[in-house]
Every structure is written in C-alpha cells, then in structure tokens.
Image 1 (tube, rainbow, N blue to C red):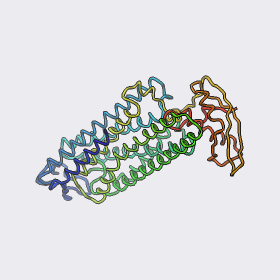
Image 2 (cartoon, rainbow, N blue to C red):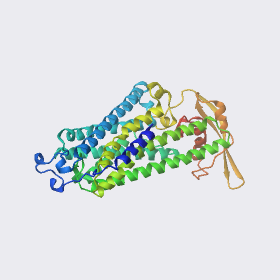
Image 3 (cartoon, rainbow, N blue to C red):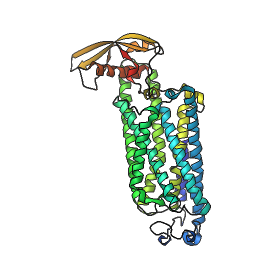
Image 4 (cartoon, rainbow, N blue to C red):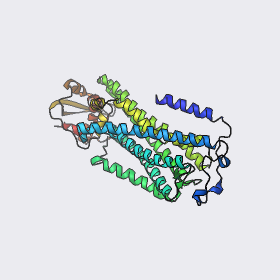
Length: 432
C-alpha cells in the first residue's frame, strides 16, 4: 500500500513539474539578513504582483499538502503510542521489548514534530507569512531538534541491533532507556547549538533561515550518515542470519526456522523502507536549498516527506504487530526478549546434556560436554538437536570455555528460542 501510494505521488509530481511558470522567485529586498524588518509591510505569500501569477495556487498547494500530512502524521503516531501503552498496562514494563519500543519512540518524536510543524504552518496559513522573530527562531530550533532526534534514534537502534546479532554484545540502556534518550538528545542539542544563528524564517515556515547554507549542509550530512549506518548494519544482520540458517539446515534444525528468518527480515526491511521513503527526498530538498534553488515541488516534497515518518511507522506497525491490541500481545518476538531490562529466568526448567564439537585445523576435533537448563516452554527433543553440532568459534579463543559455550548457545538460541530474530540473551540459560 505504501509503495503504491508513493508511486502515485511521484507520478503526480512528475506530471505537475511540466506546468509552466511554477518556479517561485524570491525578491531579496524583502529580507535583510533573512529577518523581517518592517513585518507589517512585507507582501503576503499569496501576493501575485510580487510572487507571480501562480502565487495563490502555489501557496495553497504547499500549505494544503503540509497541513494534511501533519494531521496524518500526528494521528498515526497517536495510534502507535496508544497501542503500545495498552500493551504496557497489560504486561508491565518488561513486556515492552525493542521491537515495540522502537516504533513507540519514533511515534513519540513524530507526534511532537507534527505538533511543532502544525504551529509552524498554521500561522503561515492564516497570516500568509511565517512567524516573526524571536518566536520563529524558537520554533525553528525546536523543529530541528526533534527532526535530528528522530534520525539519531533510528541510527543508534540500528547499531545496537547489529551489535547484538553480529557481535553478541548486549547494550543495556538502563531503566526506561534513559541512556538512549540522553545520548540522542545530547546529539540533537549539539546540532542545534552549532547552527543556532542559522535558524529562523524560511519562505513558508520557520526552520533554517532563508538563503543560509549551514543547516541544509548539516541536515544533508546527518541524513546521509544515518542512512548509510542503518543500511550497513542491517545488511550485516541479513548475512549473519543466513549464515546461521545454513548452519542450522545442515544440522537438521526445526523447519520453523525459515519462517522465522523471513518474518524477521520483513520487519527490518519495512522500517528501513519507511526511513528511506521519508528522508531520501529530503536529501534533494536540502541539496537544492544549498544551491539556493526554489521550486514549488521542492516545498511540497519537504512538507509531505518530513511528516511521513508517523504515517509510515503506523502502517508498518499494523503490518508487523496486527491491527488489534490482542495481536500485539500474542506476537512476542525474540528481539523483545533480548532487550528486556531485567533478565527473565525460567520458572520451570529441564536439563539436557549436549556436546559442543569444535574443529581445529584439518583433522583435530575437540568435544565439550555441558548440561543446559532450559524453560518448560521448550521442547526437549528440539534442544537435543544441538548434540554434535559443528560450531566455529568466532571469538578465536580455544581456552575460554565460556566463550565457546556462548558460541554453541548462538546455534541453540537461533534454533529453538527465536520467534522473530536472533536476539535472545545468553544469560537466559545456565551451564552446569
């Protein structure tokens, strides 16, 4: 549905770009250092004598697209927030895993971003001019902060997913993920501080000041950096999953594993696609802003795509978790269990003996026997499939039994304790 809507929207923009006299010209004498001097004397943005015969059309197209997508963004974000809040009330804090916290955090930032932009554009829509300073500077700084906060959240969560899956390193962000919020907020504040003199009045709203290049350059680089980060992280996760899948196939793992992998990858790719669809067009907008090129299509692109995060997050959340709260409760993933703040010990356990077989060189084989406690919810026959599994020691440390056992648990973990993705914590299991 999202891809179809995006295709229709792009085709509309292409067809509209053939219209004549669509370039919006800006008269620099209306601004002094991009700050209105005699604010009441400035021509309104729908003034056809100043901005050309299409000024009224361009103004209402830009404002209309912006305000409509703002409301879709806001209510889509509220829906995700409400659904996850209901899950939190039912199951407590430990029931809200990363696969739920990720869209929840994105929805929070998008909700506040849409509120900020609603205040931003509503004033322009009513008065045909953006806010005057210093209010415009405050609104612009808030918008830039929320926008960068949203991007940093996506990038850091991508990194932690890569660390957990590929490096088997669990990042604990503390109660209520306060470390994550502290880090992302600090980075966003730093960005705003670096560009504090560059925020103010744009042509239609408050953000980066008109004909200033610092914020367009900063935003372009941040978007590009975050985009490359999530693509690299998730590509590595993709190959890691396939590597383990091939290993498990050779050792007669559960057939359910194929479905698990497809579902996990579908979730990961869906959020990547949402991010790409939201921010890739903004690269074009910021590049054109840097080149001081103005076009009605660029403003339409900015007002629609910057608010697409909440819309895309809503659709992907419904696809991944279902439309009703009961579906969310029943779809507990391993990504959820891996990122729990407190480890969960099984109330009832069984014990099975397993061999960890390690090949050294061409012919030498070392075997390690250990006992494994696992929860009642696991099938003992599935656990025994771990016997005689050949596992390569990625850590390269022959003398450290704990590290080698952790490698064996990677196979065990992926074969029977995964609902969506290989992200369970090894300390859910105990050796004897």
